[in-house]
View 1 (cartoon, rainbow, N blue to C red):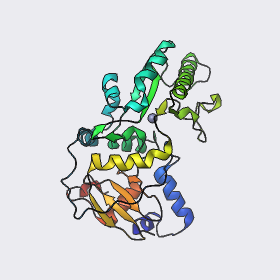
View 2: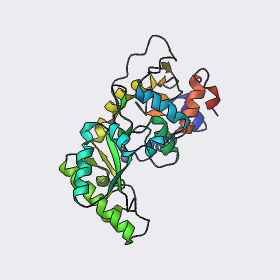
View 3: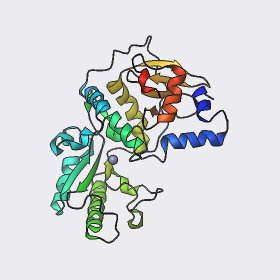
Length: 288
Ligand SMILES: [Zn+2]
């Protein structure tokens, strides 16, 4: 067991304690974590300066200062930051043809925005298909849609606004299925306003790939946004990759393999591990 995990559980080593920690860190995932690929070979030396100079890395660095600006982009900018496999223009046209007024809440999100949403419990994963990057460019493999008139309803069953949202989300599900997309409305097992209508708990969300592909997309994305960082051994068989901005990925160990740990959404685990392996030079102020 890692010293960091021991710190977290107050020295009480128990499977129940570990399970609680993991569920605290990752909740019931928006995108269920899947097994991670074989750990990469560690770089020969840490090089904190090699954060890539790609558009996605620059946006990520900006988002570390002001997370969430992507939500305020124009729909045209949001469309430019989505992978073609999401077939978003086609989906939007189909919804318009049915009389809806579809708007985009999110396509691409920076990791710092994901961290913010995780901390606010508006998402339960530290990496989602919204964070995907290709060739250094934002290339979301997911989108969240709403109707301009109804948004997510008004939390009142049977109200015109909620019924309008309901009709819109049903249409999103039908058209997503017709286009071969994965729809968040088919995800059950978590209570939501929409459960009683068979709309799962994320009916605004569509994605191009099944959840089992998430680990592969994460391993392609992280180096393009955060660089290689350094690989460092922790106790208890854990191996971590610490990126230049301080984020930590669990490379190997008894649990959480492949998962990304961030300062806000995964605060306790991130702080404990950062204390154990040492902060990135110049980033020590982030460690509470
Ligand atoms: Zn989403």
